[in-house]
Figure 1 (cartoon, helix red, strand yellow):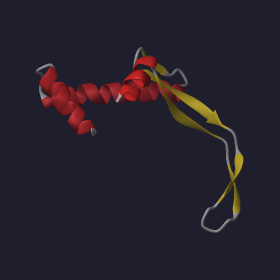
Figure 2: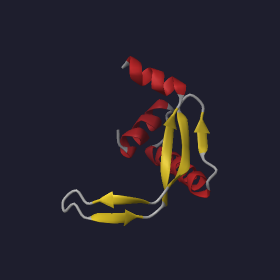
Figure 3: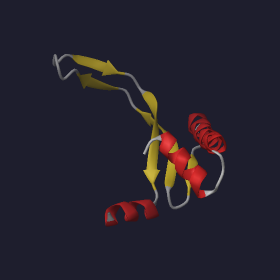
Figure 4: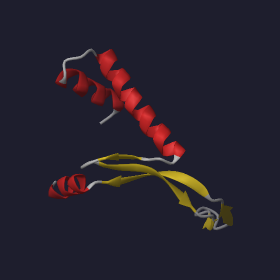
Length: 92
């Protein structure tokens, strides 16, 4: 599902215009991004949580040339699915 598909579903489900649904989706995505960037994270009960994780520096290998290179430490976004989402996915 793409962002535009989500906007269409929301606009039909709650009978609002596509522009209002688009604005709502964009606000939600922006607020989740801000919270993750600031280190606070976001938890949506039953769905999961978004947070920022630290990755240590390490030695990496270029698979094409076999040359070793240093990968610096960094922060990465991380999503941890909630219990209800995990169970729903496993039921298929």
